[in-house]
Length: 605
Ligand code: M6R
Image (cartoon, rainbow, N blue to C red; front, side, top):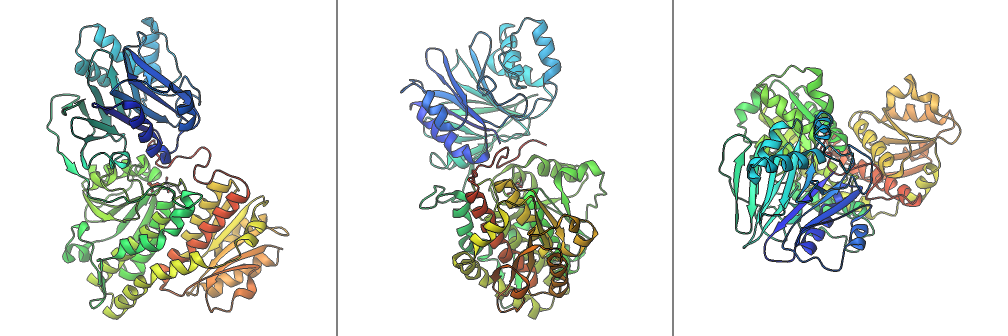
């Protein structure tokens, strides 16, 4: 979703800001804009891509301070006027903002009654006018920002630039902001990703913080009172985030799965003891033994990984486990047991619904551990402890390698807690062995010459596609349906295979595509019966099954996966589904990496 980048230093700001915007592109946006301090504040903004912004920029804008933004529309349509930055009426103050101001309509009316003329339909614009009014009343820049924030209700990560000040004032409440510390120059960003090429030293703002940033440093303050900040060194190597030889990030990230899994499990399994060690959890064996139940919380792909994780924990450790939709969690008034273990699962670590659930659990005196990809992200820091999944940067909106690594990390946890309870060493050893084979197994699936084009032909013109699976394959069916739906825009329905006959079977007619995930596990025979039920109604079966299993005769188009342990099979069976979605989207000429209406990190509730 919306992204912010800011620069103050001795270099020309414009190219740094544009490069930063490109780095934030993966978050999803529909317009972008830039403000650079010259003799006056120069603003350029437009709907469309960053290239569209570049095409309207003058060849050069001299100025060593600036702020820029990618906007994902919430309040107000996708228009040039609604794009950020927004200016005060006298054009002396510019603002970029992420988040939502919930009381903006009321403030707007008050400001309009005072004669303020608005240039946009956005909630953001009220902030810049509030600051401007406070400034005119004689407050200094910091206090004028502070007084405006005191009036607001909602969330913000924002940067304000004043015509008469060689400083940028930033503030955070619910929407992340990180400040990068360079040599006589400073960078501001909504996530650490664009900062890596400039500096490893960063300061994360906390909710309620205001920072005054100048060339040579920053001071941090609270909306009420003052504070000291802590400088953090980012150690995570995010590696190469360019496309390289791949046509799309999604395909690149699918191909990165073998290496990503290697990164996730390396150093975390102990073959001789048949267990795993996740130091970041900060939990003793004794605590693990006493856990009454586990709750896992996430959205979208992270939710489906959590659903696999909860099955793995019950299967291996016999601890009751539940997966929850983050956006429903606190609204459903859940009973929080402080002795229970809670996991927040998220690739970006910025998903607002998940973050809100984490805070709710913490307010109810329980701890939450993160299962997160982006190091130093809001959820990771809010949790304090957890497991990094080490997938490396995931830029395509459709999540792929994060799913496999979330499932890997949750299997590691299931193994560790299982071994701290009753899981026999031999069972632990065979899981460790199976895990160590996953990188080469995923590689063989990715590199196989499977019949993707046949699957695409069966799916591309379908009114809808049904995805079926049982047990560990039920969440995989949901993940496959989500992938196809979000990038190919084909309506998809995912059901536990046995539930299909209680309703969705009514959809089936001659040629209806049904994707069935049926690895060689204890559910397999029952799933075959469900395939027969579909075939009897004319359905075309796209079947994912285990190599060497003789069930190919039940499928019209078949994909094989190597044999593995039951709880690990989702990491293999999901790969053909990712590729089916990818090739179908390609065939339909969709924007694979940036599907319409979606954002990479969803930072609003
Ligand atoms: O960053 P998160 O893992 O918290 O994101 C959760 C969902 O927004 C995300 O998985 C979304 O569903 C993806 N577009 C799925 O491909």
